[in-house]
Each structure stands twice: as C-alpha cells, then as structure tokens.
Length: 115
Image 1 (spheres, helix red, strand yellow):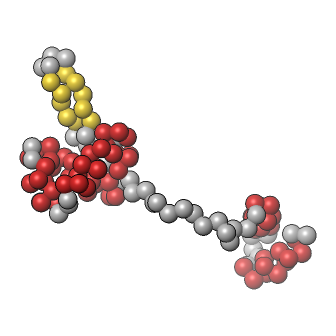
Image 2 (spheres, one colour; image 1 turned 45 degrees about the vertical axis):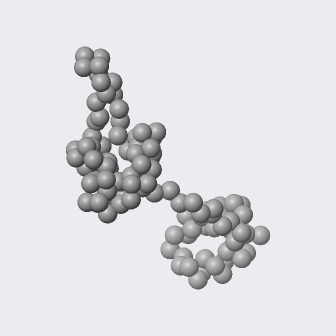
Image 3 (cartoon, one colour; image 1 turned 90 degrees about the horizontal axis):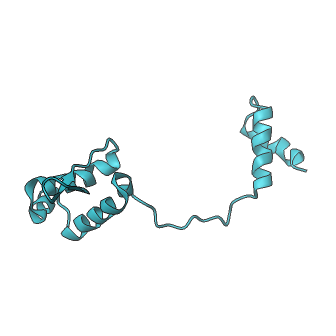
C-alpha cells in the first residue's frame, strides 16, 4: 500500500497495488482486498493468511513498493565446491572457441587446455 497525502481533502489516500508477477499477485491481492473491505481480519480469513503475515506484507509494501514483496531466499550460497574464476573463464572460452565439441570431448581436452 502506498500512502499519498491529498492536500485538498486533508486525509491520506491509498493507491491499489497492481502487478503481473504471479509470485507477488497473491500478496498484492491480499493487501488490496483488505483495503476494499476495510477489515484486515475478514481479508485474512478469505485469503487463508494470518494477520501477522498480512502486516509483514504491508510493511514490505510500504517500505519498498510492490517489488519488495518478491520472496527472498534466506539461504547462504554454498561456495565450497565452486571452481576458481580462472578455470571457469577458461572453460567458457573453450566452449565459445569450439562450440561443436560435446561435453565428453570438452572434458578430455580441457585437461590440456587449462595448463
């Protein structure tokens, strides 16, 4: 919900949230329904969401707009098994230089190409 103060009516007006992103649509729909009904509890019951979740969504929308409603992963990326960037770049360069070579041939010649 985005609050805009209207200087003519001396009160705040709420703009409806619109999006085409299917991940955000449900969350924006919940916020819009609560605004239409003027009742958070009813909107949460209809949508099957807790009020705590509603207020978390509303806070995200107030702070960052509609784009802030996208699910964020809390996982820290596991970089233990990642190869170093020089090796990655060498493999990419080889793949660009020889696009017809398959996976097996690239792996075999890559041993000599990286040295």
